[in-house]
Image (cartoon, rainbow over all chains, first blue to last red; front, side, top):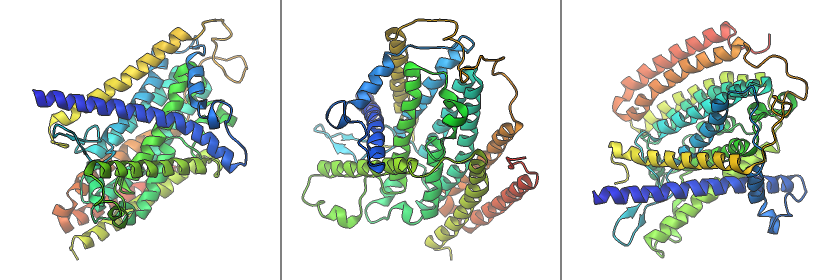
Length: 353
Length: 124
């Protein structure tokens, strides 16, 4: 019984920590996005609230809490509230299977795993939870009873499900080449200790996954669901106060989590190349080694988030038929091709030739 | 005991769900209590570019979206069939590869049929 209780306490600490980090990074992604946009467009970005505008996300969040809550009189009230809640809950729950670092050694001899849970079906869990997020958007848009919100929601959900197929195929190829485990922890550890990052064996798969991640998070150039010029505000036209905040926040959390997944499964997560790890491996304790790995993981995530933002300010938005053609007629055949090549290459690596 | 392969692995998922649910409920209740409430008939109407709203949004929309949803179900189920093969890739060897390539070929025939039927054509 004691083991169960300590297990629950460790996991509860981990849940709260991941929750806090996800919220903090999401909040400061909004700051970094505006600062980065300023950098790219040769202007300042936020600089009034606090030093370098660092208090800006808190001010924005606080403002949203004190705004008037408007629920349209023709909307379906229960579903109207359920929509953003579902989007936010699924965004937070995707973080549960990501391994954040090597286990830490506690004073009482226990290992503290920096992962909420290591499911042996980790990737299927991720795909499943991401799919539930589509329901949140569809419910929110439909319940608003606004034509623009409905069109935005339909667009968003058909875009997300279209790119999920190619994403699933890219993941199948990844699983084959990383040794046949769906657990994210296994995929990450297989890349360390002499292994190479999966992106070396899966360059095409990584590009497909990256494009699909952009589309899944509704980021530019795939931000048609909230295309201001055609659809007012897309599926969140009718939302105000913190219910709007939940939609916007969930987008940034999704961006953070998908960056973390890409960094973990394609770029080795907390592992670094061997020559780099050998620089400090002998001279530090195991726990410090684990913490350095975690810092490297966060640095990789930061690079991916910045690339997401860089793309937003570089590439114009797709037209709807272009988006659907890219998803169905380019990415799906390409990911099937990638799967075929991966199968043959892996057969050769397993010595079947 | 990081991965045990037993149902206890799923307990932290429940904890994470509770944390997320707690956060969402707190924010929605807090914003409901904190914000001002000044209702009016015009303000509570739906916003459609400022033009007076005609009818409601429960109208039929393009069947293409429905088609995409159906195709997604078909293709995603086919992708799910590939996961067991990917996990047991080494054990199944050549037999698995040949069978799966046959499966992918059949999938591509279906895909070609879709194209020929113009199911994926967006502009009329």
